[in-house]
Image (cartoon, rainbow, N blue to C red; front, side, top):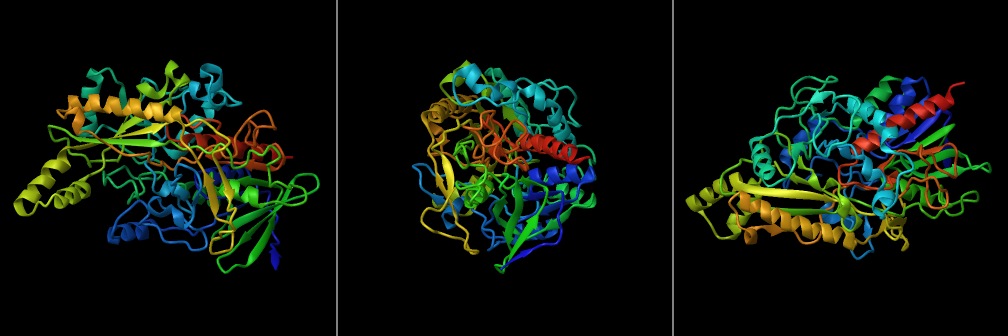
Length: 539
């Protein structure tokens, strides 16, 4: 039996992460009646910190409680939920709770550069955005104010700005300063990474960072922005929050408007919520899955899917990792995890044939890694202690994010084999392949890191490179944006072509993934969307 709820809000937001929180906040503050549905629970920071301290082993997900009714994939065991069907794994992980995955992110808040949005025009690959950088630039600034971003002014290969960052950049750690000095001598530009983490002042009620160095998986004091903060602001403006509500079906009327959303509670009971407007702000796997599950008379192929593009063009930043031991100690692990970026490879004419990249020195502590390594070598006693001290101070890791091009064959669909989760809903099935555009860039990056290592007193043949690619949880492209309804899901405003009252707030709308983190662009488009929905609802 389905229970129809008595309330009929102006706007229902499905999802309570950074995107859903910001859409709801903008709409509620404009006077709309807003209801937010979240598939998981609310979380308490102190409880998360305690769980992390007691966890063995510790991982990015160890602070976060298991949510049986809303499974949360983990990189080391995505097979529990994600069904991998392609030649390459799409081993994503995400948090299904109020605040979403920004609970355990690195808080990197980079803008796209203008050329990132015109790949087809400039380089003959990928797709162009239907909007250009100048159109989104004011919203980038609004997002930086909302999230509290600290960043560098007039940095090379950073995006043009009309106004300064809300806060100055976080100072380099000693490690980042040495990387800056040595790599600048090699012709690289190493800049302060923009991030929404307070550094030298209180901002928006958040304290300044105290350098715990475990931003991932949990900022213990709340200096770092997380999506629950925007949800709480939406609630303060009058929005209603319904937790542990797993949306699974959008109802479509004869006029193609969405009339209601249906959701399940942990006990399997089902509810139906009607509204005037709907914003789907689930992540880039769960949102398309809801749309594809919603097959019905007036949407026979699923909601928003007349183009057959829902679920397709799945992207991430396939990552490389290279490590070496420097001659001199640099003491990683002091301050936030990532403080700088090597940005020369964000753009250039070579994007015609290989991916743009952002490289990042890793400022996390490596004590556990070098300890396991030394024990496996058979070291004991004083020799073991000395090896740990020596290597932990010198272990250097350089990560890269590789831009990936949209490919319709890379996709997510509800399980084709009838595999379901605890509520009986289809599990996500992933078809995914990483192409030569990324492979060529990864090889170039590995060669470059070997050259960098020599500047730190290591040898080229001592550099270790990971096999395959690391996932970075930047789930992009599966409800792609475009002007043509025949090859895209949403228009330039992120409103679905098929349904005039359904909007999508997610990186799943992005036509390109760029070489930088996606969250600031998610936030900018969400604020823009919230204001547009509010303006349309006003008499």
